[in-house]
Amino acid sequence: MGKIISFTNKKGGVGKTTTAINMAAYCADFGKKTLLVDIDSQGNATTGLGFSKSALKKSVYNVLIDDDAAVNNILPTQVKLLDVLPANVDLTGAEVDLVYKRNREQILKNALDKVRDDYDYIFIDCPPSLGLLTINAWVASDSVIIPLQSEYYAMEGVSQLMNTIAMVKQHLNPRLQVEGVVITMYDGRALIAKQITAEIKKFFKNKLYEIIVPRNVRLAEAPSHGVPIILHDPKCVGARAYKALTEEFLSRQK
Image (cartoon, rainbow, N blue to C red; front, side, top):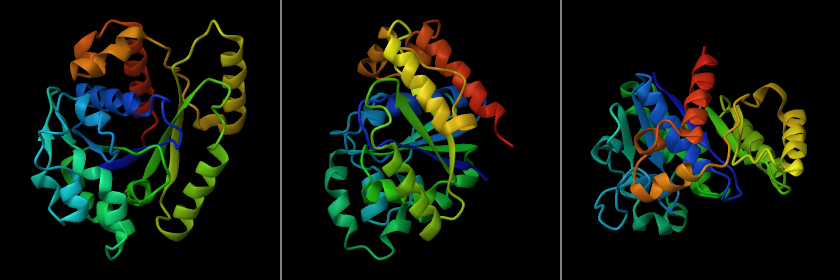
């Protein structure tokens, strides 16, 4: 049975989608059959894997709102062993549409339960918010990975995020755990980055991954080419960081 992990942070611009895409790609490269589910209405994980949101007729929206089977909406990517359940423009209204659905927090879980045996890992790229789409992701998940940028406001909102995760664990998904925390977009030249990293380590302790992802121009370029970094520039410092991070993630699996 595949493990389902949500990549989540209520703050945008912290490298959440970049981390989800590239860890999924490296998991696949390490021989793990992987599915990336894009439930962020911005659809950046979808475009970052080479798909046009406006051209897609089927997407995760059909799964959430029209009760279509997940398998009918999954697409193969350019990376062997990596599939995507994409987002399209319809997902923008999904939060409102979900309000009227029965068992609305369980819809994604019920859909992914039918395909989880087909994959080693299912990664969910969540919206930068704590709405119904994110709650659906957490209810479907075994754990969450939290990307944090090493900047002044990094810890802002973390307490609320952790409290909401605890509430979902208590009321909707007792198996939900924090899988790990990853520091992204790190600039070692900045003293503040080192100070914030020390704060994050103090707060999360052994949940913090040792591998830190640096700021990297090639990482920033890759989405505009519609490929993960492993296909854009596998030798760059950002690619090496995500490869090592994925190795660390896999080494922690029981």
